[in-house]
Image 1 (cartoon, protein in one colour):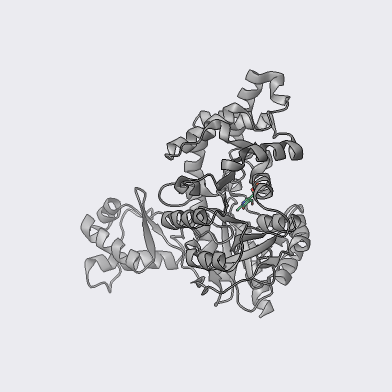
Image 2 (cartoon, protein in one colour):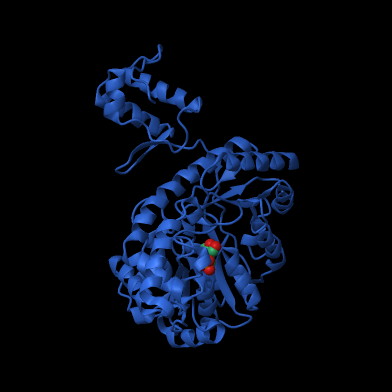
Length: 479
Ligand SMILES: Cc1ncc(COP(=O)(O)O)c(C=O)c1O
């Protein structure tokens, strides 16, 4: 929209309609693309010889028609013209099952690391805007201050400087967490593995969302436990009524839920549901292991409070990490274990002694300098735009009846193409240089065969658009 003189289309009756038509044409022609910001009311008004209220009326109409959307304090943006949204499935009663997903996971992990593959299967939000230089500088400062101490063993529960920074961040959310309560781990995966072993034993039933992150399922399978899948709403996360029914029907040893953003749905659990879940579980003495790895990556509004904010007892175990917000390769996460603390630290020592000190010191420096918050403020809009671009690209390239999630944070899109076999598609796509995550790995067994997870945690590029076109063509060929 660089023109100095913009002529309204001929057939507009009211003046605001000329703006509506103009913008729609620009979107149709691809001049304005999903995620693009529209000109300000004042600048478009002056270029078209119209008043600010007239342009505002046009933008409100375009918003009503779902062509554009307003973002607080940022202006108006073009919305993706997405395929159908995912439908909310009615709750059905599930039974606890042994998980069997490990064999397929061997193949999908292998695919992620193959050279030359477009890795749409891996969820790595930071790749959309790597913080390489700032992190490098933070590490250099640490190395010159700590010298050889940076290569020593860290205390089992973690370096005090990082624990202090984490406690400080909780305080900023209104949560009182003592630095000594926090245990630094090798990513959130270790945090959850330790937490689960503290509260459950082989054979026990663990309630999980459906769909849920495959790492949790693999953990349950490896530890010889059983999964009880709870229906999960595509927009609002785990269904509280379905959870209540499941707790009435089964002896559940623990729940493992994402407390902010679900992977793969991108749904966001409302604060009231977090409170109700904690109340429900506390009343029955069932521990909640909350997975909060995506909490800092919500697209709109404040960062969701962790579920532990609603706890009155010590049975909420909070797990998180810097894998989604700084660097997954650092393998630094943490757990706030509540009443399981003493047991958990012994387990951590027995399993992995401690976590990398240089990475912990670097992260403490990265947080303390303010770089982390500055980085998040830049990363989130990139991810939100990528979500829109990917939705739009999938809507263009995939079969007409494809359904998409509407992510409220994180870095993945959950796609349903009724009638396809996503495991077969995974193998076909790999032969064409693209990796995806087939839906079946997000369920204990036999579900989500026609679903896949695609990651938009990449700098957007023609290569990604081409990869999605290829996937769409392969999906169409299966039907
Ligand atoms: C929802 C969720 N929880 C936990 C993890 C594990 O995180 P980490 O890499 O910190 O072990 C992941 C990683 O993909 C994830 O998506």
